[in-house]
Amino acid sequence: MATGTEPPPARTTGSPGGTGVRGASRAAIAARHLRTDRWWLAPAGTAAGLLAFVVYSTWRAFAGSDYYAAPYVSPFYSPCLAESCAPMRHGPNWELFGGWWGLSPALLILVFPLGFRLTCYYYRKAYYRGFWASPPACAVAEPHRKYTGETRFPLILQNVHRYFFYAALLVAGVLTYDTALTFRDEEYAWGHLGLGSLIFLVNILLIWAYTLSCHSCRHIVGGRLRHFSKHPVRYRLWSWAGKLNGRHMQLAWASLISVAACDFYVYLLATGVFADPRLF
Image (cartoon, rainbow, N blue to C red; front, side, top):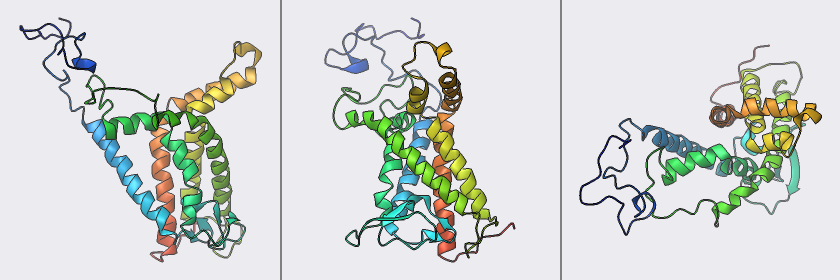
């Protein structure tokens, strides 16, 4: 056999009552898989990383405090849409929700970047494998008896990804504005650069790189075209998006870490752990 193994002599097909790779029409290979490497490390590491971010972001999102230390505002709370938001001079304060909103203002805005990442093609692969073992790794059979893909509720809702992309563009625009405001000091005077300014600058660059590397972005700028030669501008944009798309996984993780780092840095400043080091 091409696999280098021989099937059990008593049968030449899969289990009659089995499904999937154990179905009657599949080759009867006794081993669950033929991989000898530590294939479980990748899905386990992915699950651990995503779980750590979920725990941290849940804590910070429901805290409702320590998210502003002039001139820095946590990306988890921007734009701040509740009346209870901390006053930020020239900051992203849009009091669209009055005093009746008693929960953390972060819950009003995080649904959009969260929805964008949750429906992202790469993140789907990551948490399908990491948490659901669907499948756990290449050439390793998943433990589920049947597979319906994204054709049924709730996974059929993954198709709204393109709409979350538009919302993510708006959020990235607001975070860009927030980054510009970090070039002030605590008295709101312009022309200053702190350590936080550099952290926010790196974060927004990674946010934009991840957002623009999205598959939906690549389709929007260059999809549904029959002749690239007739659309040179869109072809150039499609080429740039394609290059970013090739690094979509790395950008997804890098931007996830950077946005958490930004929030944690603001938290440390707001709780008085240390003062923001000023470079000039």
